[in-house]
Length: 105
Figure 1 (cartoon, rainbow, N blue to C red):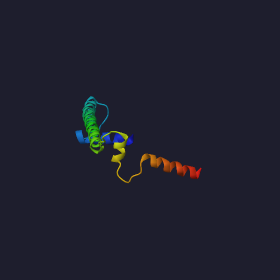
Figure 2 (figure 1 turned 90 degrees about the vertical axis):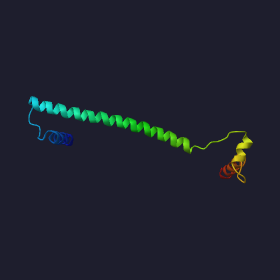
Figure 3 (figure 1 turned 90 degrees about the horizontal axis):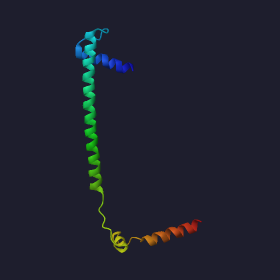
């Protein structure tokens, strides 16, 4: 909290050339102007964040679409043929797993 107050006083001093002194109407007007500047900056940053977040989501979707493989789904035999020659079939893998489980059980 102290750091925030220190930052505000520093910002006030850089904007108006002096530190805040009391609660005079002139001082209140200076604080009001400072608050307007800060709120405008906050709004600008929120808008920038929303824009950047939207772009990030677009880039994620694009990267996902570009890296996703395109599969042609056909019959079981066609899919198995796409797996490559010399590779075990799913049935062979299941049989091997069952045999291994039978040995350990």
